[in-house]
Amino acid sequence: MDKFRTLFQHFQSSSESVMNGICLLLAMVTVKLYSSFDFNCPCLARYNALYGLGLLFTPPIALFLCGLLANRQSVVMVEEWRRPAGHRRKDPGIIRYMCSSVLQRALAAPLVWILLALLDGKCFVCAFSSSVDPEKFLDFANMTPSQVQLFLAKVPCKEDELVRNSPARKAVSRYLRCLSQAIGWSLTLLLI
Image (tube, rainbow, N blue to C red; front, side, top):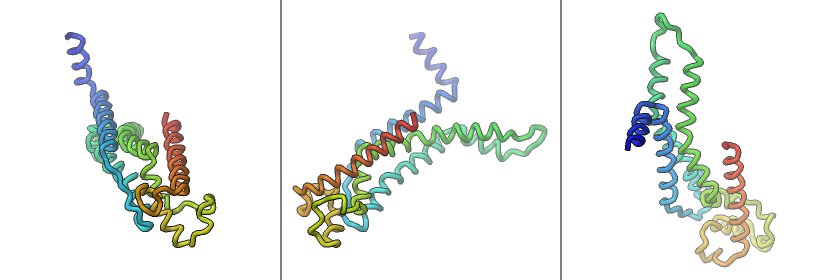
């Protein structure tokens, strides 16, 4: 019990540990939010890209703002920047350090969301299904350009009658999902 009390007091006294805990909590909330989110692509050529990219980047922006607001150092940094010079001059190195610390912690949860979305691939398939080059796939040779665009827009919707058992839909979906996961894993390796 004494070890637990000592550990608890350490976390209470160290604002760095509290901020790391808040950062970890936001990242865990991000994972829970993403896993509970039901993603349904509209499967309309005009809206797929907007919907997919919006879902890929809008929640991370909100999570980034929450991370900035939850970080106590951001308030201290703003106060340090705004205070009059007085007898002590402003040190830009301290402000840069505080700014980088605040940004690193605030970016944790948004990066988790983006990585989860890229590794899952649904947003990416929805966003870029209409922009795939049909020349890469054999099954589009006997379709008109308007039929190809309609077909590509329906790729994220497995249950749609137009693409239900189509090997071309599976190939395009697999291609985009593979590309999404490659970007996700590359970003993960870059961040490690």
